[in-house]
Length: 425
Ligand code: EPZ
Image (cartoon, rainbow, N blue to C red; front, side, top):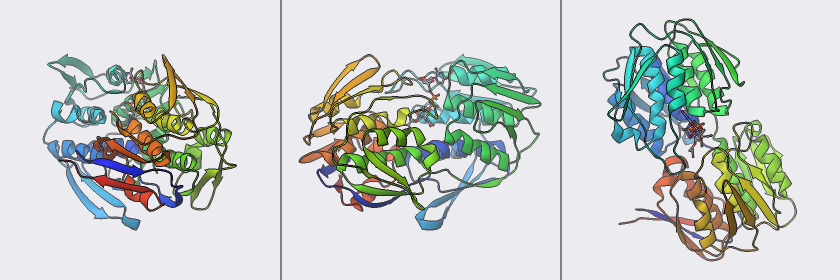
């Protein structure tokens, strides 16, 4: 297995181009199943999770072509003219939970689908009950058999109302896609409003879907009998951008993130300013550096958008390990998302966890060490810590990073980081 070797202590200075968002690209790719015409997606990042979903879609009969886009970006052409299978197997779904996003589109287009239940996950139990209840509200008949979700809508889906008991990004996406082709009107109350959902809704609208309330927690979808192909550019990755904002902070550097969308990061920017960073909107995107020497502790609590994102919690914790004073970081979305804590402590961080909150007492310096993590964001938080630490850090299990950060070591090295990938056996 490959690892990443970092010699820490160098301020990062320069420009980084933000990639297309993984968590937007995945549902957008699933949306290709809703139409027999080609869907053209621009700025799709080259990531392991995208490759996994591509394999799954190919197994369902989708033809996928690739074109070079501008500035080295990639365009995918997804053509689901003929769907040859409606089954998503355990082998693929267990690799990546977002595979469950094919359920709504397959059911809406074909009237039946069998998708493996995803099973456990490193960051929490992550059930899919809300996806299923929402589809049932549209008339789906759902049974769980032999580890599979078996969904049927023999007479087609019908518009209905679903009130989410809890905000869920994936369930909102699945039900939104299904409702686009359901007969009649669907009302979704308490829907997630993340920029990735807005991006999906805009793409669906370009395909002919009728959606009101885009960007709000109440969505009204008037189903149409068929959707068409479209061209859509994937929104820029706010989590990647937020991660690099913190890289500028933890290394005492000065980074400009080209293509970052400030309005998708407003809570994050506010918190980083509170911690002593100077963040400015520029024509290119966002410029970030410490305002005045060492950062200081600030408290964060994860919440659905527009709150502070759980996908930046681990990175913010790394940042706070070297700030002056204490910081209380509370995770409210996933029950087991502190796996980076013991690894950061191996690098000299002082962190105490009480239930869903972590108290971080900032140190002047961290010390490099071999570390590893069990999920994507925890892994990148260790990269951030390594960039700031004295000496050498070896981040193992790099495949987690490859799931969600496009060319991460190349982007950081271009700004002065001493970072390289070491091939494993
Ligand atoms: C999406 O996951 C993201 N993944 C996650 O990104 C992100 O952490 C998460 O949203 C929260 O923002 C993709 O977009 C592919 P949820 P998702 O449904 O949709 C509970 C990353 O690092 N829940 O909003 O799976 C659930 O257990 C990742 O890129 C139910 O109880 O998240 C959690 O506590 C990891 N029942 C909460 O809701 C359900 O049916 C929010 O989960 C669904 C969810």
